[in-house]
Image (cartoon, rainbow, N blue to C red; front, side, top):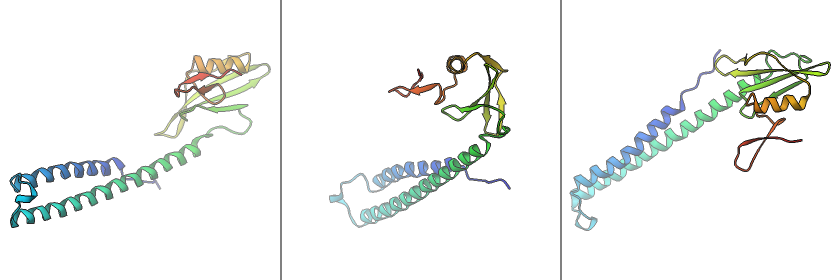
Length: 178
């Protein structure tokens, strides 16, 4: 059974439309009352102003309700994405297949590292969030040391993970020197 959520953007669009209606209602009421200050209002102007206040209150309530519904659906959708990612994180990997499995900072790629004799074999895969599968990016790369592999991951593969990179004060990835 597939989990289905409503697109939260729809709720945000309704909230945006309500915000526009708030301003349009203000100008409509101002036009109806003849662009007079409050001191010059007569009986009909006060009735129009009361209708204006009620309409504004209703529009604000609708806007807030739809904004809250959008936030609720966004949180629900994000938690479902995280739950699916956690389920697929180690898919197709059996215990002992690889010596290291590293994930990049954005959790969209993984590096599979296998040590054979004195060499390290590297496989880089990208996560397809639509299918939930890991797709190979290129072939197998072989390195003589783990340090050389880390440098290649950083400089050649643009693969930034805790093992080979750190964030500078601007949030940019820089090579982690050990």
